[in-house]
Amino acid sequence: MKAKGSAFEREVVTFLHDHGHPYAERHYGAGRPEDVGDIDGIVGWTIECKAHKAMNLAGWSDEAEHERQHGRQRFSAVIAKRRNKPVAQSYVVMSLETFARLLADDEVN
Image 1: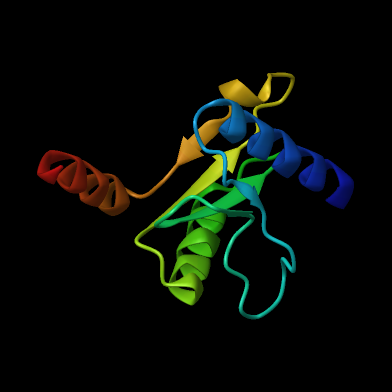
Image 2: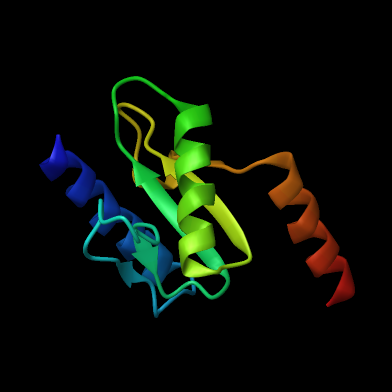
């Protein structure tokens, strides 16, 4: 399972590079007590990638939020792979609170 997760993280990084985020890269050291997410280089964000057969949105969102606090980022999100779909059709999951803060920031700029 770890190999599938690593492969998905690499796919996400490639997708982000191809869509205007040249500094995106994989975070190494996942699973440490001070884990800060799976993708680095997206300013203000903790991103957790998941490529599991069964969805655990609540648990994954809690994990991303916990890691956001470690990394002291403003936002957290989970990128969840959809089975038998390309990376571009993955889901991005965040709490309503995060979504509202994101919208508020967008209105200010």
